[in-house]
Length: 285
Ligand SMILES: CC(C)(COP(=O)(O)OP(=O)(O)OC[C@H]1O[C@@H](n2cnc3c(N)ncnc32)[C@H](O)[C@@H]1OP(=O)(O)O)[C@@H](O)C(=O)NCCC(=O)NCCS
Image 1 (spheres, rainbow, N blue to C red):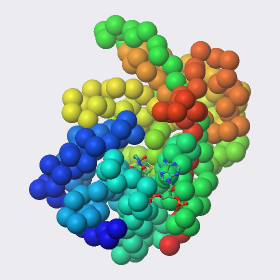
Image 2 (image 1 turned 45 degrees about the vertical axis):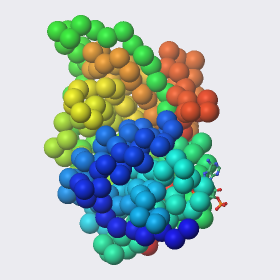
Image 3 (image 1 turned 180 degrees about the vertical axis):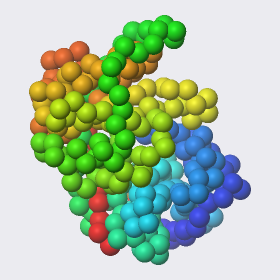
């Protein structure tokens, strides 16, 4: 099947919605609902793959820094999967990154997504950083009740410099929930929904996730690195800070997984019932 690629514009939104409607539940958030916002985002290019004029796949290339590009929002039309479209979408993202003089291109996927893992292997991406997701559904405190945590957020630069000295600290990227970001403080500056907290030699990154249209907080991701001894106290503080939020997801690296087991947090599961483990795939250009 011959594929033609080009950047998408607002004129393509109806075709993107058709593609979105053709997909199963692995289209979250629905690309038909987010496309307009992505097209208007100055640091992300949304591009499409066309077969005989039909939009059969989309992908987004986000510039995280001037040299680090991130492929996201990959979706292949439900009737065109397993025909090479996904491979073409990731490959075109890499080409775009090269044109922008990037030295790194990366993406994130859950390890159960055999298609996107296979594509990464085929295209020479290296699978690295993995985080396991847990969640808790808590009874929401009434809106007027303030949080009871005494922890104060740290400026990103200070937090990331402390992170470097923590046990088994990540050295190049940090997980932000369902994606990764390079350890560059400016990426986190001026983002009120991303806050760092440190207890001794353990760090938590709190990421508040908002709904696509209403902008209200839907759930909170808490990403934890460091010493196992401080994980649960830190998590308790994060729950105190987010008492008005029903769903809290906690993501931890392999060595901290056992700390969460047996607590009132439950393993996150993906569509096939397997554990929700998010992996980084990365390629030096
Ligand atoms: C994942 C997805 C992008 C793959 O796209 P695709 O066009 O079906 O993939 P391709 O046809 O290019 O397949 C590439 C390889 O993956 C394999 N593959 C694709 N889907 C697979 C599946 N569900 N299970 C196992 N292997 C799969 C193919 O067999 C092929 O392997 P090969 O090179 O050894 O023959 C597509 O299924 C999709 O849009 N899924 C929903 C959204 C999503 O998961 N996005 C990616 C988030 S990172």
